[in-house]
Image 1 (spheres, rainbow, N blue to C red):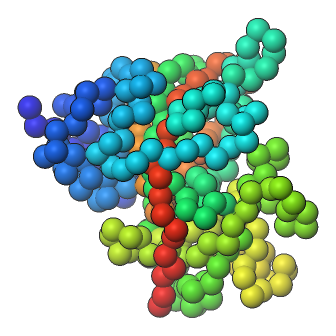
Image 2 (cartoon, protein in one colour; image 1 turned 90 degrees about the horizontal axis):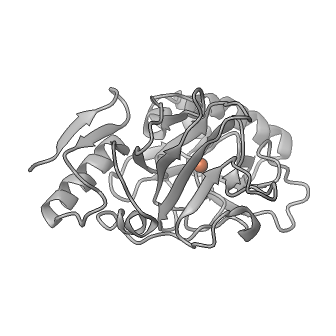
Length: 279
Ligand SMILES: [Fe+2]
């Protein structure tokens, strides 16, 4: 049986029907999935039933699994390639997973590492009755919509990406110490599509190379609204599996009530060092 590819919106995402990701993907289907993924940036597969072992193999059509970069006490799972994203507490009141409750700002996964993950997937296990949706923004579009003068200011510059797992908010550059951080191109040239994508976000971008803190922050503030765009809002159902390209998209989480349980499993596909775009 052939797969069906149904765009989710005009600007991001496609649902794939007719495939069981728990089973090995045939080479001709893998080719179609890769083409669809690079074209649509995100793929959704509904009604999947997968063990951790099957989840680990579910990205073979795209590349090598990436290792989790979160500090071990926040992984919530000893497994190095599948992490639990959850607010659920165990019998001792300890979180079983990472990233807890509530809203989370738009960000690129792992931008604070030298070779950020190519892709992230999430697989939904248990969900709140309301909220906890995932918003996705298309960063090719974000770049395409920049006015000429902003493009000239940012293309070719580097951005300092910082992630302090303990705050989940504005990056603080005065005391980086052990906080994961990395300089990245502020506009990346995608290694497959060749298109330019804006690579800044409010959760992790803290400074611009060659600019003082005031000017750098001011420029970032002008850029953030371009990536904070909801091209697709995913309303989760149990069994949903979503996989997206981290080089050319951002994602955010909508709020949900702390008394509701939410559990997703997350895995990654290893990436390479990012390539800077030029005008
Ligand atoms: Fe994320």
